[in-house]
Amino acid sequence: MTQPIQFWFEFASTYSYLAAMRVDEMAKARGVEVAWRPFLLGPIFHAQGWDTSPFVIYPAKGKNMWRDFERRCKQRGLPWRDPQEGLIDLFPQNSLLAARLTLVGLKEGWGRDFARAVYQAQFGEGRDISTGEALSPLIEASGGTADSALAAAGSPEIKSQLRTNVEEAIALGVYGAPSFTVGEELFWGDDRLEDALAWAVVTR
Amino acid sequence: MTQPIQFWFEFASTYSYLAAMRVDEMAKARGVEVAWRPFLLGPIFHAQGWDTSPFVIYPAKGKNMWRDFERRCKQRGLPWRDPQEGLIDLFPQNSLLAARLTLVGLKEGWGRDFARAVYQAQFGEGRDISTGEALSPLIEASGGTADSALAAAGSPEIKSQLRTNVEEAIALGVYGAPSFTVGEELFWGDDRLEDALAWAVVTR
Image 1 (tube, rainbow over the protein chains, first blue to last red):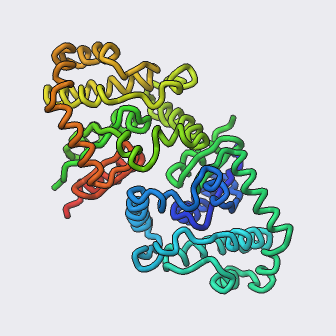
Image 2 (image 1 turned 180 degrees about the vertical axis):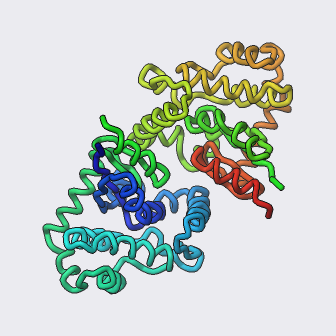
Image 3 (image 1 turned 60 degrees about the vertical axis):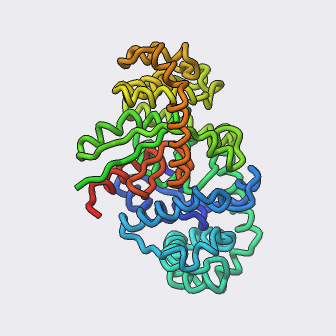
């Protein structure tokens, strides 16, 4: 018996990239279903008095994060671009449109490929991922249709769905990304994916 | 060829407990020397505007930390005491005296056993570790002499040595505990002990 795992990710988050690129493969190997749940950290950070990422607010923490992120991308053979070449000036990127488009794509079947493409464009290639212009080619490459997806992303239904994701994340105690939940059990960080999957596999 | 690893730990830190209980064994298996470096997070947190632990300041983060800490203690078979039985009200404990005593003990040969005993008393048994009265039995059990160790812990030399540790940690970019450094390469968190050891064994 396994329980499904909820994968909570934020497009501006470096460590969400690490998790997005491995969660499906690892879950499949254990027979665990994954629900991809895009959400926004902005409202959560704002509620605790932060107007940007803690990696920007606390420079020592930010410096080590970028170094650690580089080491881990290289360990895993993931595309990585030196943030000093421009990415660090964009960080954290506005992830609102990418999150809404992912919700459209998850309904239409291209959402996971799109999400991975957005992460790779951002952290593997150092690209802007905040605009429709930037994201359109990624929608098309993932099997969607850019014009209709962008229109759907602005619909009340999708806007509401993203707000609901944020509210549900907060209710589950999520305070950073990526996070994983199995029922009400919360695991924070790419480093806890293994623990979350083990939790999903044990019969309770 | 291996390089030595510096193990930076703070007695108030839950995750430092996890690292303290395994660092020597894991390093020995890889032929890596470990230098135990007690330091204080208080001055570092204070400099970034925090007057206590981020696990207290940010309740969602704190709640998940205690849960995650419980899961990991149990995974590793480490003594664990439910923080709701009183420990959470002491957290973060004043670690100044324990840190100074560890410096005394490291010179006299009982420092590592003492440090592990302090962690186990605190997180495995829920005990106060902030006073000479609380720490004296742990000194004796580790092979030291409580009266002389407490006197030495108040000496200008030991006080200065702890200040130097804090300054060196800051200079290396340390912003949390535990941390590990190999030369100038910084690794943050018990989760990065494996990476730090791998870094130490690669010839550079």
